[in-house]
Length: 200
Image 1 (cartoon, rainbow, N blue to C red):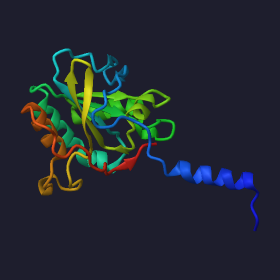
Image 2: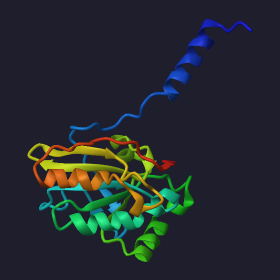
Image 3: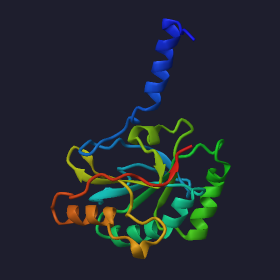
Image 4: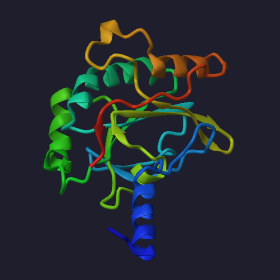
């Protein structure tokens, strides 16, 4: 079959577009701020807490099995590092019209059931914060370090290297990244592949 030149160009653009890496922040970038609603009804931004040294931003949700497996570890990260200046902020990135289990009311139920000690925010209908960060999976972490110019991205990726069994994890990427920042050291592994569900 002979394709017209216009049809061939259109086909190549579609194929090329599907293989492109999503836009978003990279290591060393200043993270974009946001104003998103927490499950307690309050609006939270990166500047809500003036006393932080940085943040552990986790894109996560109610419905992804991987997110569920990591919930206790996310709580543990907040409990360990919040007092040291690096609290967790969790952001639910899915469109609730597509994933009804990730609605704001369901988020409030989940936060209450699990007694989340951290902010659990819902992204806007346009999912602009998710797009700005370039998050692709749940869970996916962005470790931010506060500087004079803003919050700089120091790590992007997975929490550790064993989603199913935390005790069997041999690499705890987020802990290592935050520990390095606390000790004034460079982060040895600053990027890993996020394993989880595709954001809807």
